[in-house]
Image (cartoon, rainbow, N blue to C red):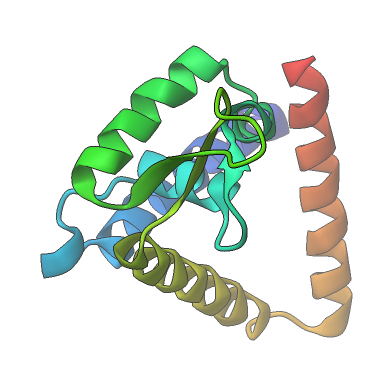
Length: 146
C-alpha cells in the first residue's frame, strides 16, 4: 500500500472514530437527542453573549438558511433560545439555555480529556510534530473551503 492510500485510510478512520466517540461521550439520559452536529453549532454559538445568526453561520461556513434549520432543532431540544435584539428588533440573537450550557461544558470536558489522553502518550518532539502536522492539515481544509 502506498503512503497516500495509507494516509487516506487513517484520515477517514480518525474522523469516523472521533465523531462516533464524541456522540457517545455527550449522550446521557438528559442529552439522548444530542448529535455531534448539534455540538458543533452550539460551539459556534458559544457560552458567552448572545450572537446573531449571521456571525454564527459565518463561523460554521454555512448559510443562514442552513443554520436556521439547525437552530430550530436545537430550540426544540431545549439547548438554544432565540431573543430579539434590544438595539434592533429585526435582529434575532441566539444563545445557549442552561441545559445547552451544561451540554456545552460536557462537550468541552470530552475534548480536554481526549487531547490529554493523546498528548500523554507522546514525547515533547512528537507533540511539536503532531501540532505542526495537524495545523498543516487544518490549513489545507481552510483553503478547500474557499
